[in-house]
Length: 114
Length: 113
Image 1 (cartoon, rainbow over the protein chains, first blue to last red):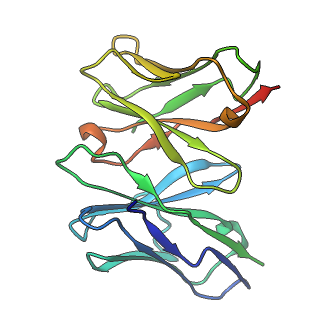
Image 2: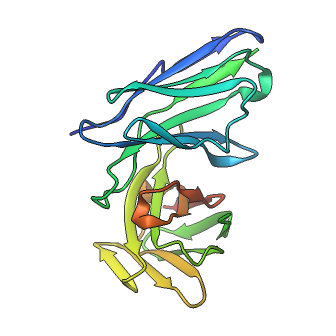
């Protein structure tokens, strides 16, 4: 059963530290999404890529967040410097554009910034 | 941009009864409407989806209906069971799901044994 893999599952760090979250999309999927889930804001899109090219990063704070896809099997989301308000669960999802296949979510990274 | 509203925010039903969750969307270009179930501490899992060219879709005890004119869609769960207890999210997307999902705020469903 193909799954989206996210690492780490949990991360606790101090304010000001760099945080890197990684996502391995389902093999063959060409679209990768980063969502953030908080109690206050719910599930919201940060950025997404198709064929490794960024299509929309309007939901991402540009001054401290960056998202990349170094290759088709790896997407990264970085926060530098991190702040307590970045504490949330970050989900990666992947899908296949053109095939009409639904987005499947990874297990998420639970991030706590102290 | 798209705005998805979801009601109710919490819902309690007796085991065996039916549950209905409703969503409305604002973007007339949205044409794909999935529903996700999220258990505590877990990832959202797709349970059913519908495209705009279909008015209703059913999968065992779960069904979704779509009214394009009114821009609303609903999730129906029949013969509810304790394992149906979870938070349910509706979402909307353009391009049959190939673009970003805009989520509703979620419904916490509790099945009372």
